[in-house]
Amino acid sequence: MTQVVDFQPGGYRYVKAVFQYSAGVAAQPGFAIERVRFHRPPALTDGFDAIAAHLTARGRPLAALCGCELRSPAPFSEDGFVEFNRHYVQTLERWGLVEGETNPVARTNVCPVHEPPPTPVFHAFSYTVPDDGDTLPSFVVAGGGEAPEGHANYRDVIVRLGDTSPNGLREKVRYVVAEMTRRLEALGFSWQDAIATQAYTVHDIGPLMWQELVQRGTARGGVTWQFTRPPIVDLEYEMDLRRVARELVHA
Image 1: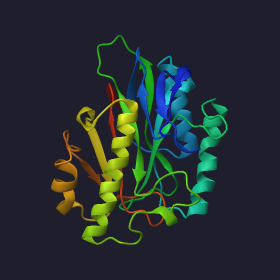
Image 2 (image 1 turned 135 degrees about the vertical axis):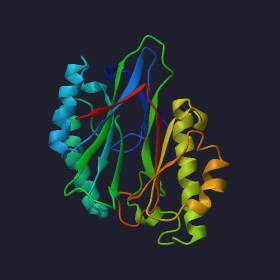
Image 3 (image 1 turned 30 degrees about the vertical axis):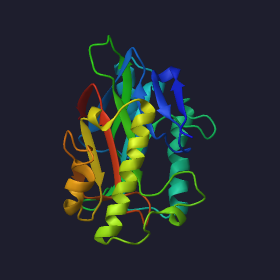
């Protein structure tokens, strides 16, 4: 059952998922979401420091952080992914965002094939700011691949494991679109509300674009295809999407 939780300290609600991230966030009434992309992606520690400084400069508490976008050198093994996530959430715990296994912050973490970073880095982050109601409601749906969350491992539940044939990719894309739809609807939105949709894969999804994405209404604002791999070995396709009030670039 999908659970949506109001995170009052941050001014947003989130779809509860797993300890390392939520499935998506949406600004509560009176707030809007802004997104900042790093021009030069910093390593995790430096990135968190930059985020804290930016939030302070904007007059926002650390609890306003609602989304993190990471880039990693290569897909993790399942054990390596757990180890990385435990390290990642330590800062969120210190900031008072994570309590036990509950994490309100949405996240996308993918692995560029061209010019991969030497270590995991921050690509972008999102946070809430007060809003007088002049902007459309804003949201960020976390990245998700072709395997349901919350199981003992990913490998046993990956859709069409190891199958990157046209039919295999089709089923993977369909699963991810359905999962993104579930997250959107839980937050009170639809694909028609998205202004930025990303697909992350190294496989040719061109032949699937019309039938599986455009005709299903997932590409109203276009789809940005990023030549990256999902963060775990054996996953092949991932998506995320958003509508935020303002986007900035961090020098």
